[in-house]
Image (cartoon, rainbow, N blue to C red):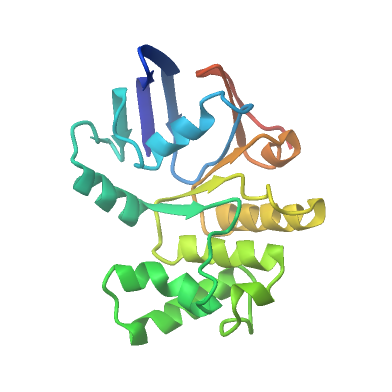
Length: 227
C-alpha cells in the first residue's frame, strides 16, 4: 500500500542545509501493524509527516496504492490525507466543548455528511473501541484511556486506509497503555486495520508485527516481531 524509494528530506537552517532523512526505502502492506522507533531527533516524526501526507517537500519516490504522489498540489495532498489517514495523537486533541459523539463525528461533518446520517456511524465505531454509554459526555468527564479510545474512534469514523498513531500511549500509565495496545491489536486482527505507530518505547513497539528502527535519518533495522 505504501512504498518509499530512496527518500531524502532536507531542512534549511540559516545558511546550513540539514539532511534529516537519508535514502529511506520501505514498504508497508495493507493490514500490517508497524511500529517505527527512534530517539528524539532521529527523523521518525519527519518520516511520519511524509507518510501521512502532511509534507510534500522531499526527494525520492512515494507510491501510495501503486500511484505516485510526487508533484501533487497541496489541495491534492489534503484530499489524500482526509480520505486515507486516521490520526491518533499522544495528547488526544479532543475538542473540550464538544461531546464524545460530536468529537467522533466531526470528520464526517467536515466531509459533508448530514447530521442525521452520522449518528449510526458514530454509535458503531464507539462500540468497535469498546465504549458504550458515554456519547453525551464531555472529554473532561473521561479518563485518559477513555479519551484515547474516543480519539481512535474519531480516526476510524471515515474508514481510512491506515491509522497513523504518534506516541498514542505517551500520556497514559502502563496499565492503560496496555489496554490501548490491546485495542490496536484487536482492530488490526479483527478489522484488518493498517496501523503505523510511532513510539520511543520498546515495550510498546514489541506489541506490533514489525519494528522499524530509525537512527540519524536512516533505517537501522527492519524486522518482524517474535511473539
